Image (cartoon, rainbow, N blue to C red; front, side, top):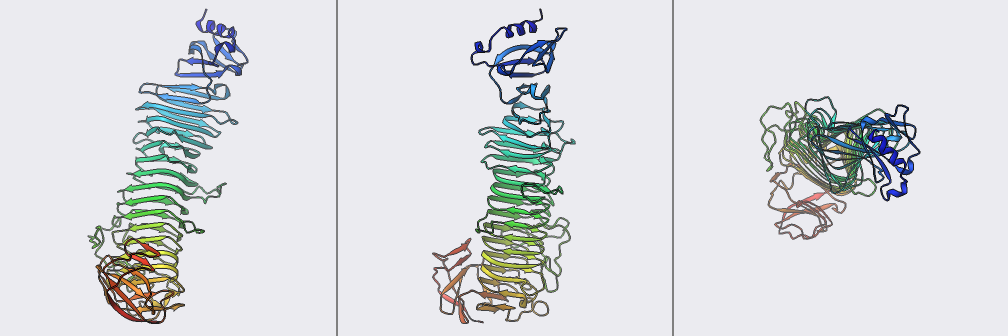
Length: 624
């Protein structure tokens, strides 16, 4: 008698209660798959008329020649796949529910025809040339449990399902995915649907043909302390459509040949309210570094919204940018002034710029041209400094940049590399900003508003703050605190809006210093457009030393703010204003020690309401 037939008859003669804790039938196949079924789910086991096929519950059948053995085991609730260098083994408890598993050496393909129940698949083990592919039409969960999967022929994990895919990285495990070179796959980890990544393990991914991680629809990083390391990619580190949302995770992206994280439009409204094509970060830690040319650390076809988290973006390639949005960039929450800890630096020259570049910034880079906002130039490059290619800006929005809160440190090193650029406008509503840029620290073709926060801008080769709106209110100081200066010399200014009459002050503290354009569009009259508080516009003090701490005092001698220059500054035109400055004689005093207390500060260069010791007076000026 056939040994499987004999074993089956013995099984049928044995009661389920006699199996103690072994409450499932294991059908071990010769193709590397073990199908399991709980004993209490077995209605009948029969054979076909020829006696060469096993039939379970009247629906599933298999040739007896394909069965290695029948045995008992514990009930399974998860489909498991374990890899080794020569083969993979799978255990499938859903074989009666429309789930089939194909194993060919180290290639595993799951086909799921179930459209009512979500299944979970757990992947583990190591192989140097294997595949996991999932095909289905219903949402599913996949768990990485110590998986090292390299596929030299294509994607390591290929999820061909257009629904929600929950990808859990099991706590305490390290998982590695690597795909093959010169393939046709979209990513080492690809998902046709929307990918939601969770749990506290570590995932390392290398994309040798295109992206490292890619989804045709959205990608969510759930609230987690897990780690995702993108160790390299020919194209983007993380790529998706619809939107990207991070509520946690530690994400490190290095050596991406494309953008760090790139979000595309898909042309359809998203049910959960996120803007199509938007990149959203609410929590987590992101470190993005690259030396590739013309790429962005963060790139979105719509908005970039960074509510909180810690981000460190360093781009060194020619024409590379820290972040770029084709619509708006919103940093911090507008309702409570909280926000991220954000550091962005670029050090590459313009992509097509072949001229020699030398900066006097201590951290290198730069250019030998006068930069933007010159006497007749429209800004962002100046009369002779218009960039001939893509420049290495730090933060760029094709519409508006809104900074509502957070701690921002921005540095750039080369000609054309502005710190913050909003093509249609920039609004500073809160937060602490410390910008040290060779080109403009803040630039816009629209209006620039300071409504709150504390901002420091130092440009070494261009204007510190430059609006090209060409209308009244081009630069409006309505609140907050601003210290803005250029050490380039004329015609580069602390505040440049082509005509001093375009500057409007309705509140806030502002200190600027730098060159004076003089004449024509660059009027250097001693008046601004309007001010509801005392202000001074002029050339005194005529110079500032980087070795001193300067304090602006009101008409009654109250210390309003203390500021320190990071390089000697020749001052042809400055604006000094504060709500309590008063009208009449005010003084700028100096000392050699920083304040011992204050109500707010940025770095070691700007203090508000300081407790400070002064030793002399640099200038006595008349406020209007």
